Length: 429
Image 1 (cartoon, one colour):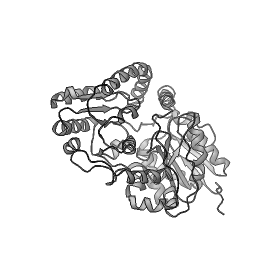
Image 2 (cartoon, helix red, strand yellow):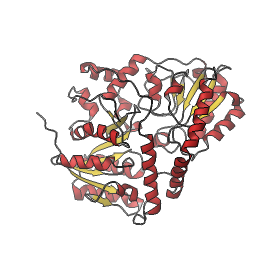
Image 3 (cartoon, rainbow, N blue to C red):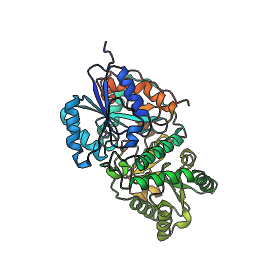
Image 4 (cartoon, helix red, strand yellow):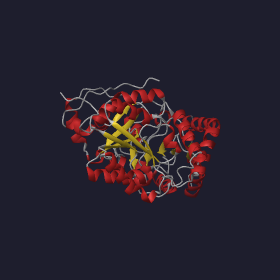
């Protein structure tokens, strides 16, 4: 019998999701017998970790590759833990860890949001092993599984916690980051600009909610067929690293031109903003300008964030760059067109039609193939819970530590027939 233990395991944590999740995960790994350290790059990283095993990095970003090599050597690191794998400090650490045989554990927001988070080894999104796994390979791995498919809930459940921790993180960077003078954000905006965006978003949330309800009501009661364009954050790694677009405006222009030239004259196009959109890009103004130039201004709508399910239930199809929200589209058996690298971009259920043709006569997905794909994810990398609410973290920690300590990554374990039983519980707040 293989005993799950942290003996002889030495973990180095880098940057994680805002809030206390990484600290709680590290504490549980210590209780399992592992040694744990964390490198922090600013006061936001430091705030929720505590003193035990904390290593501040106050040097320049250019010196980080050599510094992480030193940490690997001095601490005899066996495992690297991080949230997302594309920001500079993470990409450099991952590349060096892999040459040394260090196991890389990557967390991300769930591919099957809401109520799930992603845990993978080696890489996520465009670097995930899912990119190279076929539906037939997944079906073969599932032959020994008899789990039921779980309904996708209609809301995240911890959005307010997410916004709060983001605000608190950037407040610390703005007001108390003097010891980390070499810190450079992995995004283009300054710390002050990020803080202002989070503050403005918190203040504006009640007003945006009213605007959103009115816009949603206009679409739902309009009586017209419509297609959804699922937007994402322009600064998000999935958009920047795994798509053909440099800016969101490029995607908006392509979507509107495709709709104008292909969709029936009585159809409408609804742009749905990401729930965390903070105003750093002028989405609504750009959409209205491009729609007017294409002659479809009266048939194009913009909805600021909010729940997706109510809009999906009446839509004809959806287009996106590579948003994880597309999984909810496929779950409903709706036609889907994507333009970036995405773990769900499989020919069985994602359209390969040119965009005007897609808007005119979208092909439906192979729903059975998608359900098999979704079952595979729920048996491997998708864990119930969340990073931000206390209830979500409790649910997540019940499973993830055993997966981290397992000698095999979740995909390999299921393919080899050695996967441990999984919890398939919906999160209860």
